[in-house]
View 1 (cartoon, rainbow, N blue to C red):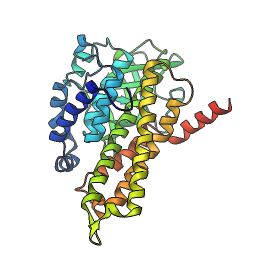
View 2: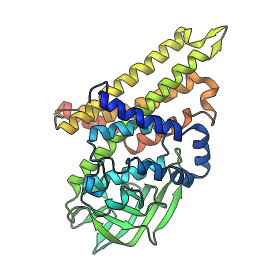
View 3: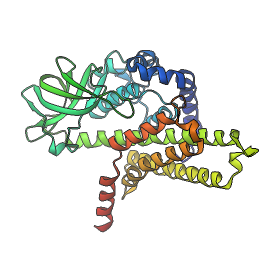
Length: 358
């Protein structure tokens, strides 16, 4: 993928954008915020019919076998179009299963959205698999996972846990689990989950040998998050440019004021940098040509830049950008949430420093 998408990729983007423009707007987002489950009901079937749930899955399990670059374009448009997070997170669950075991029998129902799956990895004070406390004993999971997206509504949970001195990735059904719902900034339906002997119904890989597969899968999740962030930044920039052309003050559009132009130019420069970093990280990862800090640099920079672009957009919108009827705040909320979950700055800067000093 080049900095400018190919004609085929542009055609994909156009169709995705067309659907999202028709299906998602501020009024619907506000209604879905009041009743989170209604977003899933309204969109899940339509998105599944478009093939987005199984976009990169094998054809024999109902997928389209799209490459990761085209998949990243899809997620870019999901960020731009503000597809509800509940739906995006179900899609992420399917993608994780595809990455871990593309022949998993569960995919037949997951790619059609007849069944849904969520990702259950983080613990309250542990984000690194080697520090997990949750364990698998026999064919059951014991322990507590935290900040699980779509935990209560998903049919299955994909759990990463300790087993035989290593890491295992297993699937359990959402039966007899105990939940502690959480109130979050992005209203993305999180909960802490207690697995008190939850029965394993499927294994993705060999017992205790899942660390390498987990790392690859989670890197892909991070890269898709970068694509979502990029699409959201495109939307914030475009919305802001349109607004400053229409908003008049002192007898002229505020776009004519030098300070406004400087701030908008800074936003555009930042978005351009994020575009290059994101697409370079994705294409080099896919091609296997990562040489140094390309991916780490993208993960360290793009999330923080996303927050800054959103804040500048709010600033230039004035009071308009802060009312709940305006879509700006949904982008900003996602920026904060995604930075915490997918692109925490400190560990990536630490890794970059270690590579440079090596």
